[in-house]
Image (tube, rainbow, N blue to C red; front, top):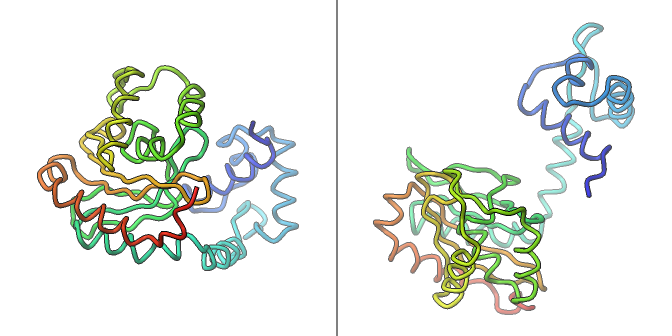
Length: 247
């Protein structure tokens, strides 16, 4: 269940990230759907905490540098992403494609870190970006879970599962695909989550939580080089300290 005030704070921050200019509170309220009185009170609280300021009487509000400094301090000490960054870099360099570390956020996949390909035509995303459970990452994360936890998560998904094109993904076929990936040791998607984008992923557990190493790329290019990409994926996975891979 969402906590309304917390959701509104993030909606305001994300709005500024999208617009990138000062806004008056009525415009912020309109674009976020927050009632005017609640929006004004929320913005005043963010000002009082040092996260917003008023550039001028009629200019409205804009975030201060405090948000940047707090985020930088937090991210600079993230133990998991710091440990995986060299592995993601190695995976990106070995395949020439975008590499990512993913985990579950409810019934969706969220990227914790992304190392984008250096190629001009590439799959692009960013930390905090979401992906459907039908993706290679989603399949790998499901495959890493014990069967009972996997069943519980699948049952909580809003039926029906759909591909990027809107086609319904039949649950039985999807579960068989996940099981096949568990047997193979890696999972694949070929446009189910993003049209014309293919993915490869290897799931695993860290202290009972599911994570996945992911490769994303234009579909034709990745499938053409799939054998080498899978080899690189599994070689990088093998570099994760065994002491970390505990249930």
